[in-house]
Amino acid sequence: MRTIKFPIIGFLLILASTGCKKYLDINTSNSSPTTVPESLMLGPVEASVSSLIAGGGTSMYINAWTQNVSQNQETPNYDVYQVNSGNFSGFWTDFYATTMINTYLLKQQALADKNYEYAGIAQVLMAYTLGNATDLWGDIPYSQAFQGNANLTPKYDSQDTIYLDLQSMLDSAIQNLQNTTTGLVPGTDDYFYAGASAQWIKAAYSLKARFYMHLTKAPGYTASAQAALALTALQNAMQSNSDDMAFPYSGSSSAQNPLYQNYSTASTSTVVLSANFVDSLVNRNDPRLALMVAPAPNTGLDSGRQMGASGVLTLLDFSNPGPFYGSANSSGYVLNYTEALFLKAEALLIQSGPAAATPAYRLGITAHMQKLGLDTTSAACQAYLAQRGTLTAANAYEWLMEEKANANYFSMEDYVDYRRTGYPTLTIVPNAVISSIPRRFLYPLTEITSNPQPQQTAAITDRVWWDAQ
Image 1 (tube, rainbow, N blue to C red):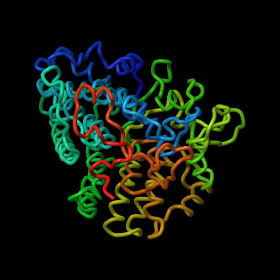
Image 2 (cartoon, rainbow, N blue to C red; image 1 turned 120 degrees about the horizontal axis):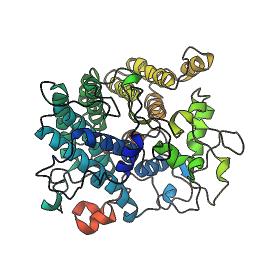
Image 3 (cartoon, rainbow, N blue to C red; image 1 turned 90 degrees about the vertical axis):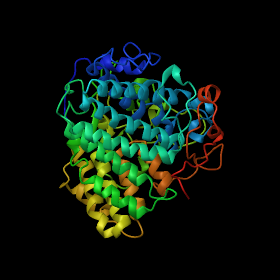
Image 4 (tube, rainbow, N blue to C red; image 1 turned 135 degrees about the vertical axis):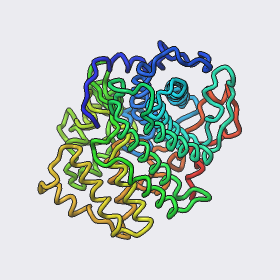
């Protein structure tokens, strides 16, 4: 990730939070989407991806269900899986009416103007957002979406078809990002990479590897074939922490990191870290603890709230995200180099076993330590690596997914990995209103009433297509 400062970040975040309506009216005809320069469209789209998709309300639900955070509220609540279709309407809006429609318009305009690098960036961002959407809801609108008034009831594409589209989209993105023969190119309007097409290409290959590995248990696919495809993609994927896709936040009132907004008591949030998450780091003597967990204000202790506990407890008795990720001016991490390392480790585990996977797994841990600013030669880091740095047949998937989740820190990928591997190990929370941990989002009430589809009968305990038993 490049360390760059932009004086207009607050302005763009306001645009993202309001759906960029001042510039991008989703009801405008798509036949003439050239009224706004790409340089004014890209920043709000990137802000939306970071603030609404990677770090927004969707992330809060997922991190409750993966037992990283807990609501300091009376049960029943979404910690104990008390949800209905109405709870998901805002998330659907974040994905479709705010983020994907504007990303689509950016791509269409860039292609029309032959500004191919902008088109490639838009395709990478679309793949990221669409991939997360289908992982949450399964079958969703895509091929007939984004047509405005021309089609207000788009069909739902099957998830297996969308996964093919994701790979094709990323291949096209790479081609467009490599096309430097004509057109305008992004610069400071690109908050993630300041117009560095080489880093966008690495991000595209990292996403290709991610989506290949999602299908290790999908019907009609084999783990070995998906691992081979992922390893090929990873050869061109992120190569260091400097390749992270991270959005810079200034920390001002209009440009705060979403983890700070969602989980910090300083921002009036009532959601805190869970005992499950905090205790996992404490019990392992993880040297990253102080950077990932902030001590409880009242006690100075690293204390998480018990998931599903009844009653409204003293909020300041619990920890919030630590200073690296949870400060108002912390960067918002959308895609990480460390994920590429753990994908490589898993692919090698599938192909050749724990010994072959260990070097990439160990590098994933050390790269995350370095990202946080730790000295990996210190006694604390070396002791941790001695304890946790070697995979065996008995611990391989459990440790790999635990360490990947730590390095991804509250990423939606944790929920994907839990569903497809069973790790990190989770147990049903006290006071749960259903008998198992949710495996998908409900289709939103707004969509059910405006665009009825057979898939909308799915329950939160039903599996999406790739989530095979």
